[in-house]
Picture 1 (cartoon, rainbow, N blue to C red):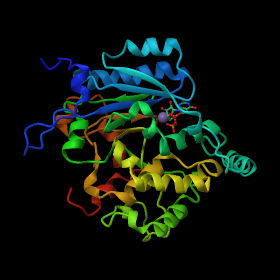
Picture 2: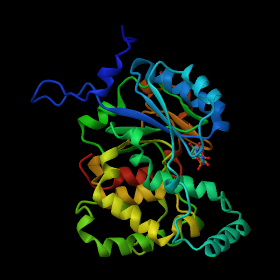
Picture 3: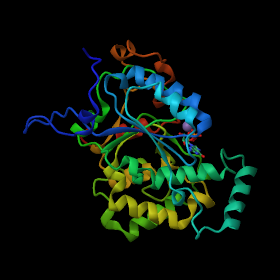
Picture 4: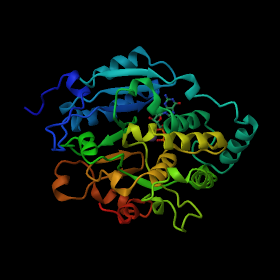
Length: 337
Ligand code: GDP
Ligand code: MN
């Protein structure tokens, strides 16, 4: 029976199959969900579909994180959705507060300008903490210590196709570091100095830049400016070691010292994406074209007729077909995939 539930022990061992064969059957994978108590019912919507489309066959564990303690109601209600192990964690205060080197006045000035220019979340301090946390700290949470791959999930998203294989295993078998469904262009007002800061980082630490990098995806003028392309990080399947690596930690720290998470509104999506572009080869990154996924106004929907049999989405609405997407440019990069 395909519905057999592996015991928890099985899920946590990452033993590979016979030597000389790179068929991997178990991966230490985990769903990571940063969420607020008041988003409980929006989250049920996401998890119900994720369970029905995929996880009821696998029972990968969930880690829920919050800057405030989860309510009893939250924990109880979530436990109804899955048979998989669930744990609830608090974000440490030092990962969700203003660093002392950030000038409060300068930050408020920046927020004011963004409000005038009607930049989304322009005045929100909590949004900035969220972006900084997802950029530099989520992978350091002790509840994630035992895991090798994570899959990020948010409230109010949809999974619109059956996922009849195991994306964690898929990643591990191919030694992939980063997987996405949607790519888009960032609002330039949120990242005015992110590119120049990243360029300074690269000239200070050229040894960290991958010789076969994918920087051509994020610039159209040989590196002078950022073209705003980024992977949408509300869906991500990634290798935790990539973020825990010295080069990534150095990069995050360099950005953090500049204060742009607060003075501007640097998103974790462009930060992760620029790191991917600097540090990874195209072969290490995968577009999960076959995972039907909806977040707010954008979706990924496979057009392959065989895939469509297992979906409830309209392939004409898939964002990769529009000029807002950067996925075509990604697939056209040179590389062996
Ligand atoms: P958007 O997708 O960029 O519009 O931003 P969201 O509001 O969806 O936030 C991104 C993720 O961070 C979601 O999983 C939210 O639940 C979570 N999030 C955002 N702000 C907070 C916050 O202040 N506290 C907590 N615990 N989670 C947050
Ligand atoms: Mn969201």
